Length: 287
Image (cartoon, rainbow, N blue to C red; front, side, top):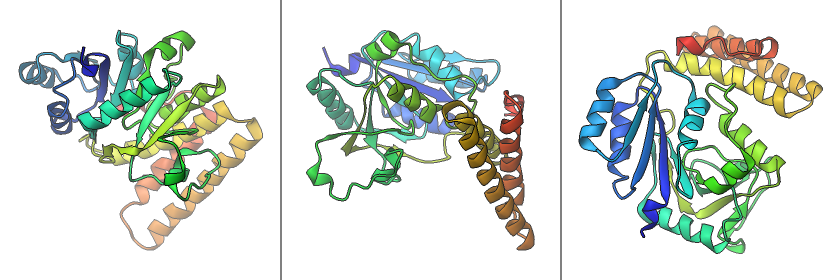
């Protein structure tokens, strides 16, 4: 049995037709591919089913967010592993083969194995910004603290055993880092396969109008919620106030120099402040 029958590809889409179709074209060897479309695009669903009849497409009448959509699909996965991809992420068959081999070498004693993204420094995968100077001195798998979910390889047996899923209070941003927090809190392993690479074309997964403005608000709200949830009250307030001050300074700098991005920093500040005082992200319906 080919390994591509043991992995379910999970993709969350939102107004990303072009990127999604290109992504699917690179996944033809996989037997199981699940897509959750958050933009209620029935035409896209029809197009996908014509071009890629093996794919299962679920369409939501409203945008329920990245985490909730992933939870919906992950609970339908029956294979041993899942591969979570963004529409603007790419990974080769050889890379998947190598990750699968590494997973079996460690006898599935892991929750997540991630390929490396060249846009990140190695220290970005650690809570304390550890520096790894020479990767030649390290094994193929490095035990890390966190990873952004551009192409994580997930051990579904562990997910179901420990009932680890996304916190659906996150709508956009930080849901992956919070997921990693949950994994590390139960002493499970997250590994970086530093010699294997995946591509992620940042910010290209959606063609939504006003995307930049709205995502800045969600980044602010999710930042505050993440720290309130995972750290003590004093630290979470201090770090949030730091982000608010930093954002206001950038906003004023944009105003003084007549630049066009001032509204984005204002939206970010509103999100940070909203997260500090409200438990729910009230901007969800506007996305």
